[in-house]
Amino acid sequence: MIRRYRVTVNGQSYDVSVEDADAQAPAAAPAATQAAAAPRSEPAVVPAASAPARAPGTHPTGGRAAAKAAAATGTQVTAPLPGVVLDVRVQAGQAVAAGDVVLILEAMKMENEITAPVDGTVAEVRAARGATVELGQVLVVIG
Image 1: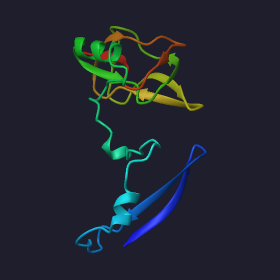
Image 2 (image 1 turned 120 degrees about the vertical axis):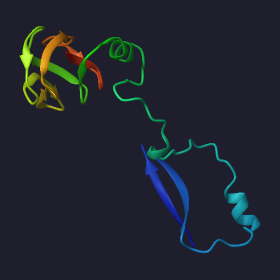
Image 3 (image 1 turned 30 degrees about the vertical axis):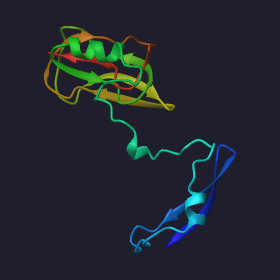
């Protein structure tokens, strides 16, 4: 069974045909259906699931975050979302336990406590108070 819908995205209307995957497919599509399936000049809508996957800890712009991540040794504490660093609670050489707050990150008008995932000693602090950080950016390295 084919259902037809009109969808509006950002003010632009699209006519969409959706086929029920459980319904038995006809042997041959009628000529009218084939003509309706011809490419249109409107932009294609790509499902989110088909977007290419990125390696964890990398940013779509590549470069800096990925290079720093590859160069570091130890456990990296990365930004779980983009935001602004409100407070850095650790310094290089300081011992931390798993669960200790290493910094406070403001994102979407909420304060997020970023915690140490492992016990260890802070090898490097890469974030400064007031800095804007990107998703996956390395904030602290625990050795």
